[in-house]
Image 1 (cartoon, rainbow, N blue to C red):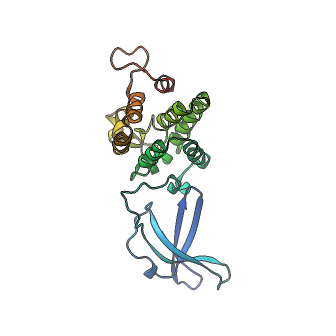
Image 2 (cartoon, rainbow, N blue to C red):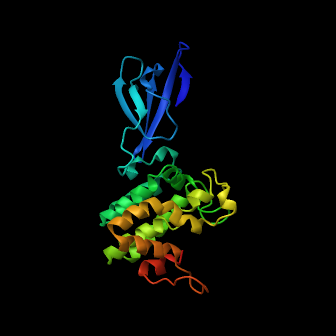
Image 3 (spheres, rainbow, N blue to C red):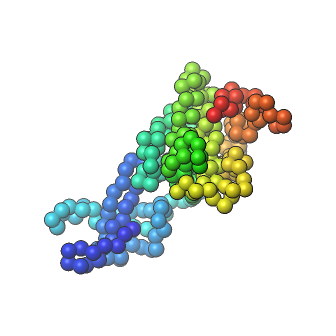
Length: 249
């Protein structure tokens, strides 16, 4: 929300709304349409209309408030804001990959992970590394989608394994949402904890829901993210196809 003044020096407010499809600017002439103090980057309910009375038509806000959506219900990936994403093509690819998954429980899992407060925004804004590959804003999203796309092609003739591989690949670096800030700096925890050790923590709420519905899928994801790499002295060796393929990245 940005406060501005018109040609007559009268105040008005410009509000930018965004989801995965694009963004829209709406305008308030006074604050009576703003039902409460709004937090930036929050989910909102909006009522608006096109006003054509001035020189140029504009979308006039009639009411805006924090979303009344029940937080216990799954939200939609389409609510991720492209206006805050440096790699909009990668965001579109993420949605396409998710739509290609046939197992609804895995689609629900992806949604439950990325609609957690601060996880989804971090996922589309953070770099994938500080000084190596994809070390720029949006790099984590771009890298994750690239890996998931590669595995989906390799496993195109095995739909069940392909679905699982897409999810495992998308979130194999999800811990970086905690170890990096959106401007590419290391967070406080990023200086003392490796991102791989945070994967299960970030996914824990969604894994709990998935496990209650299909323990096998939840356990295969846990295995893919935690199994030992080739030549490791300790840890469980990769036993599934997805786990073995993921270890290349």
